[in-house]
Length: 161
Image 1 (cartoon, rainbow, N blue to C red):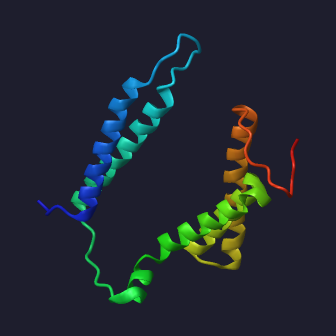
Image 2: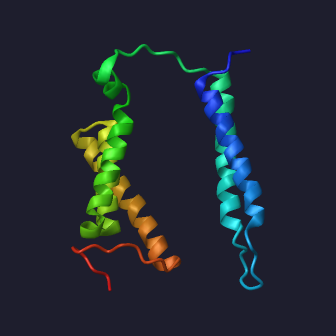
């Protein structure tokens, strides 16, 4: 059996957190009206996260990650965590531009930029990234706006009211 590694510990912590939150969901007050109890969505999401965390645990035990040696200093730290730094920077830019661009345009640009940064640039990839960004954010925006009647931030460029 393989030794316990960092991924195994993270997976176990995720499972403990999911279990704790699932138990805490029993303290949610259930009103006498409505058809869907307020505990339905949290428990569904926690169940899904628990399944993913269990898969993560099994994979981390079966195939432990290879240890990589990084160069020291700030340059080595930045090169090791380049993708998470990009993700946080792009999300910060999305949040800052949200009042101007709105959820629809800002979300499409955010997903497009994230895909381009993480999977590389290229003429054929730009088309694929554009299609994925428009479809995923457009469907999500339509679902929240029309099916769930949740008003998402519109921004200053386009107003739907």
